[in-house]
Image (tube, rainbow, N blue to C red; front, top):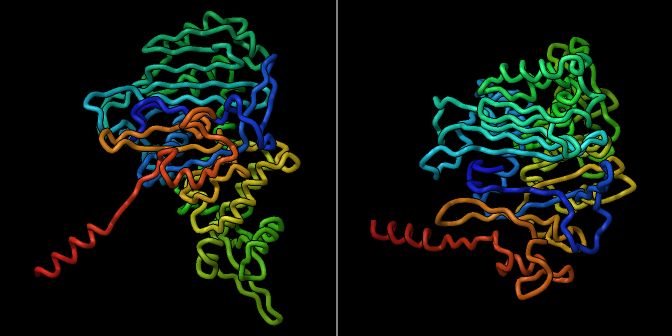
Length: 435
């Protein structure tokens, strides 16, 4: 991404394996595409002080995802996300810029044996400039490193489709030149070609694969403290209680207070309410979990089904404030699930940010899995880097035998800020004394 909130300059968040990293090979995922073998990490943890930009990285992922799924760069009136920037795009550009600069997003991922790379560059105006005439400046799609299309400012170049021949619409080969000309004339400034012209004229299957991956496999939880898992059922008029054994087994280990957890349908709403259920000899009762269980327990039982889904089907689970109100030992156990080759058979990945230093552990995370975000006090712009970027040689080198936590707190890696509130309190007390 580039020019997203505090990230004025280009920021690349990578799950690629860094070179010359030894140890903890359990967390390495591998997939062969053509003659190339792609290796990736199964987890990453992001550190940084408050207001450094950690959440902005996750917010950029969620915003990009929502733009792709909508297929346009218009605002959304229905606020369906706690990330305001994904609904009101004038909140995206860096607020220190005096002139409008493009906002860039791109993503590379593997799905169903294909390597996708999709990138867009957008003219969204300046920060808070809602009435600006927005425009897609650039849009490219590559599959297995072959360019399928490249869009510029009111121009469109269609590449060699041979690599995706089996995915093309039947009528394309009969009228390839006509389709390209028609696609050129159908470009709209505020609409993505991927979700519109490419989908209808070239390959609905590929466009659907990208949308499905974004929707189902790229699970981005922005502000996880406000997350509430909702279950929908096909027969909402039927009063019933739905109990998931796996969730209850995990919740029992976590220490829930009720006999069992269940989704209760009242017969009027499609969405079921998660309740603590008590079964007695004479009567039973269902109490909404927020009225009975602790906040940490509620966060766990909302988050755990997403962990299960990601491990069962593969994909990427990205969570903002993953560790809020949940005991570190429970979190460490969840992390080890993604590191376990016998359990993580679908190559699932976990990304989260945190303030808890317990994860700065060479026995738990590789150096390329430990990420940092720092923010310059003068420019107010954020930068992102990994522990592996320090290398292993020289005075600033980081070796896997070192105490990462200790080094972090003595400011060896940056992304930490000393805060002294004493002067504020002292000034307040002096003012009260004078009064």
